[in-house]
Image (cartoon, rainbow, N blue to C red; front, side):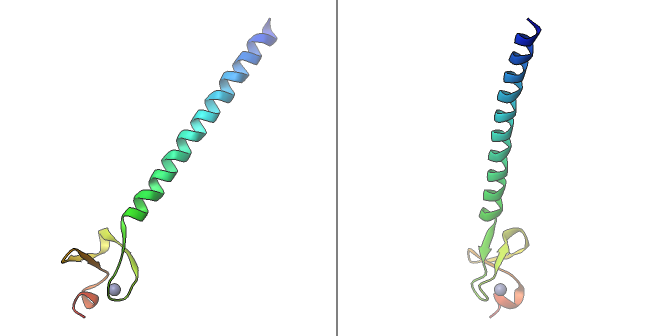
Length: 70
Ligand SMILES: [Zn+2]
């Protein structure tokens, strides 16, 4: 009887681990997507820059004021 109970617990544990791992992988994938979505190419020097650090002008993201004024 105790073996049945242990087997049942093992199955529940395995199912839990599989779901937990899947959930974590989806979260990591989503995070990578967010990073890619947040990057853009500077039209002057063709460097990929984070939009958070970029200068927005006429709908384009520039890496620095030097590139913006070229
Ligand atoms: Zn630039």
